[in-house]
Image (cartoon, rainbow, N blue to C red; front, side, top):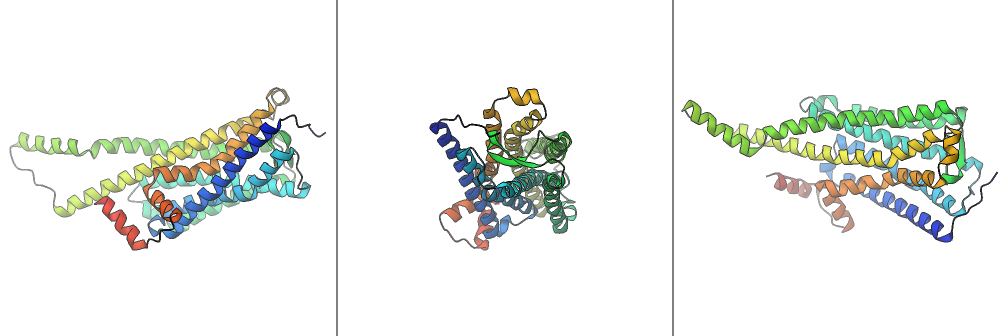
Length: 342
């Protein structure tokens, strides 16, 4: 039975405009991320490899998934045929799951970099990073193909204007996706960022210049003998270590905001998925809730580039260069970074 569209033209226009803004921001923002990493060699590191993977998943979702949701939100029906509905549903699942798992991979990378800085080059090698990214996509593809082989199925959900898994049909599949594609990445991110912020709090007390000066002067006064000053080489190494920790901590705080945004965008959607398992909940909750949570989930794909642009100086400078069509050599990027750290 086909539901009747009771929305006003104004409501349809607002909904379509909102989705169009999400699509454009996701496409442009994630393109900037990928171009920035390609142009600026100082951004080419293991962490950026994971960020590029996240940007690619979000870009593909905006390119191959969102436009059909926007068209369906206008027509209120799926007009692209049953076969493309199943294909589009699989693509939506693949890119969404890959995006969520990529955020978890970034948090693991930051955890190792800050908690185990000396072992980081030995632990987070390019083959390890490639293996993690490969797992992300294999996990996403396997989960997305399960409904094709009979565990649940793909269908057009009218109140969400999207082709996706029929979350209310198979309880076990819905709980499986909830546990391994949302809850598990969330637990990994929470664990990693909790320990990162705790380490940052402890370290910030040790590297404060004012505290260091008082401690050295007090020690000289108490023992009444000169305390040997740090050699120039040791001082440089200590300064470099402190600056590196500050950079890593700033990056971790940025990614913590990414996690908060992820939770804000995706948690309501998974709550709605759980609601669809129960007939009474399905009947009592308004359609507007399910439509809004779908938009929020898609909004996450456009938020990450904005967060990087605001919080990360390297990405912000690269964004400016790309938008202003400024050509900057890798040596100039390196000189700019060296000048900032001196």
